[in-house]
Image 1 (cartoon, rainbow, N blue to C red):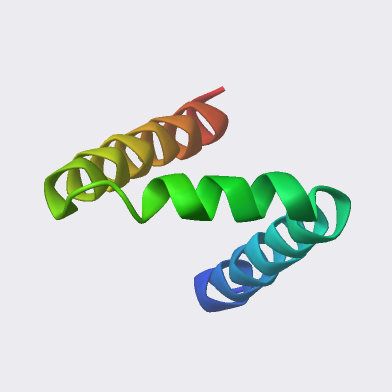
Image 2: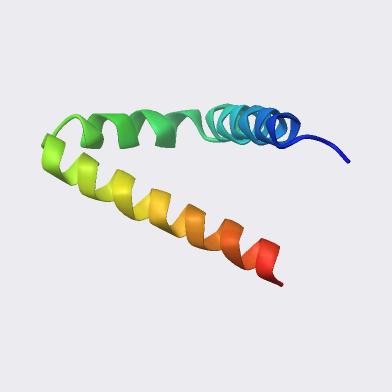
Length: 66
């Protein structure tokens, strides 16, 4: 059985793959999103980050449960 650390490294690498794919496939849209994001305050980023993290944790839990 593979270790948890091995699975975490694979998950981290897949994040880079997905992010790179988005930048490569939609560069203009990413630039527009970055411009819009620069206008947000830190509170909105913190809320979005916490919400995204919560959804990710829920998704992982559901995947392992079922």
